[in-house]
Image 1 (cartoon, rainbow, N blue to C red):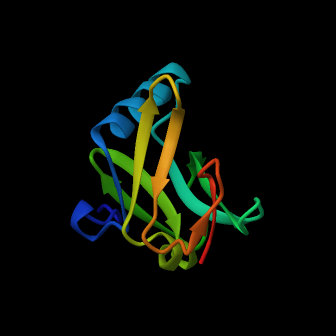
Image 2: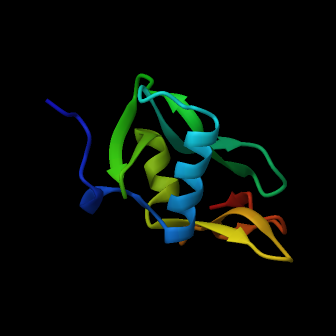
Amino acid sequence: MSTAIDTAFAPVTFTEGAVKEIFKLKDQQEISEEFGLRVGVEGGGCAGMNYVLGFDQKKDGDQEFIIDGIKVFMHKAHQMYLLGMQVDWQDGLNARGFTFSNPNAASTCGCGTSFSV
């Protein structure tokens, strides 16, 4: 029996570019199936809160989602900060890396990895 929640109820979405890059990183780093992608927040950064995005094991208080075939872990308390957020992958001349489009952010820093509510 799976405890994962369907994509329809997931608090975040990924663009096609982000999905491709996540699978690429998972393959390159040989991440085992017991790990998922942790999406969350932590205090810090120039705007007050930083985004967390990286492979991790499930922890107490996490919810598990399957989004575009990606196992995603998110602590329940982080959902109010991330609900409706879209994660994208930029691979251009001016920017390279994951970007976050968060409708809950009142302001963001210049680099886009820190925000305030």
